[in-house]
Image (cartoon, rainbow, N blue to C red):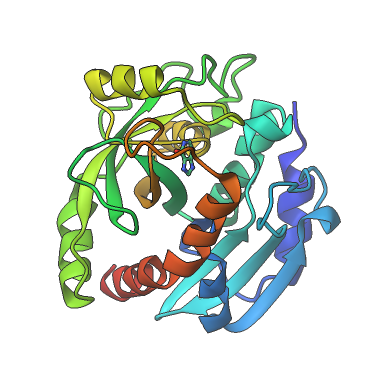
Amino acid sequence: MKNYDAAVSYIQTKLQAVPEVGIILGSGMQNIVGNITNPVVIAYEEIPGFASATAPNHAGTLIAGELRGKQVVCMKGRFHFYEGHAAEDIIFPVRVLWLLGARTLIVTNAAGGINQSFRVGDIMQIRDHINLTGTNPLIGANDPRFGGRFFDMTHAYDHGFFALAESAAEDCGIALQSGVYLGCTGPSFETPAEIVAFRTLGADAVGMSTVFEVIAASQMNMRVLGFSMITNMAAGMTGEALNGDEVIAVGNSGGAKLQALIERILEKL
Ligand code: HPA
């Protein structure tokens, strides 16, 4: 069992306030931390029990402070299953954010668009997810501190936040898409046949993160808001091959829109 107390105590020695909102920054979202006032920056490697992020463009730091009137703690850099991290290490920071006091979690990611009406650069509010990683991060001994063994996922993505996000998007002049995120392990992108299958299953976007974190957050009854930035149309949809570098570049250039949306949401929370 991981030692949560050591991580929480260490972070608490640095924090100036109790965080209300945890934010996991996906590719291209990292600049949001520049707007945090009086930021406290803690490198993951300093924190007992934190793994280190190896994915491109995912620096490993926790940044806490005030953003648009809310006390936030941002994960700049997240852990992916494809990096070889154990599922329990991927959810460790989410549990730590909760133990620190965060009861709302905003998760963001880059994703491939499966819904044919989506366009590259769109932002999709995650209405629900399909975990197709083949595993669950909560397999193993249950730590009752975080919730029950069996728990509801009906409202994993807080329905009460859907309208708030839509109105924040309207304020920002963003046409917000809404849909189901399907999480795979990666690191290979999908085959065109898989994408056809995923569309049949009801998925609107596909990515390699998020589902483990949201499962852990659900167990703790955190209110979750999720957003995918559509960095590319999924495999087989355009006739072009997928290119990992291009996906990252689009994520970086499209990040400002999602950043504006999240800041507006924080104002409205
Ligand atoms: N597939 C999986 N993960 C992704 C994609 C994709 O097409 N784009 C960005 N992350």
